[in-house]
Image 1 (cartoon, rainbow, N blue to C red):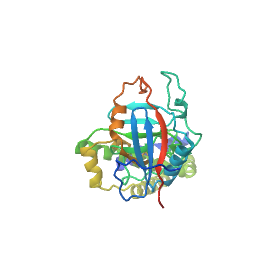
Image 2: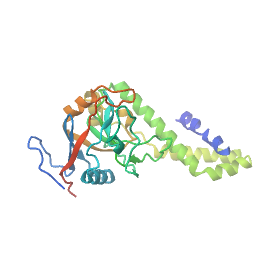
Image 3: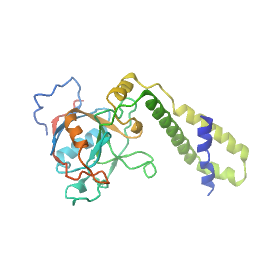
Length: 281
């Protein structure tokens, strides 16, 4: 822990310089979450939107109601990982055109609720730009992905959890450094090494108290060990729903042939999206 924080401490020096009928063959539980049907050129997919990620739920329902997703392509498809869509520029895209930068002109505040929601097989999550330009991990206003992934071993899962913990430590420490930038620069100017060291120790203590290590929930471990998913994305992307029908269609889509930019050589599109069950408060 001390080595991780000490490495991150090098940052100090940087500062010096409408609803339709529900499909009859689908079994529903007593959840109050909304359901949306995506009719694609390869078959139908039904997703459930979680009520505890209301910003993403409401935005998705708004876009569906406006017909925003009608005609968009699955522009990024990676076998044994995920399929991604939601780029409005993909509707009239030429063959081979690189896609993925389109959006409705806004982003959404992150609603990361890990480990309650995680990137399991069938998870529905928001795409976003990287931490280097998006440290708040705000979600794309329209792009989303559906996870396929593959099963992992216990050792792989533990290693990924450790890496994620280390990355979170560094991120929290870095944020604290930025918040204390003025104090750091002032002490550097007068070469107040004692003051800098006291501040460093305080920031280490705050980081350790903020980033807590908890054992992985058994349901999460079971899902990843048996069905798979993308655990390396956990804690960094907003998971706001899951597929409840049509994972066979998702499987078919992930197997299509793609170009070097992971775009399918033959277009796979969302023909239409419809709300088939409103959420209940």
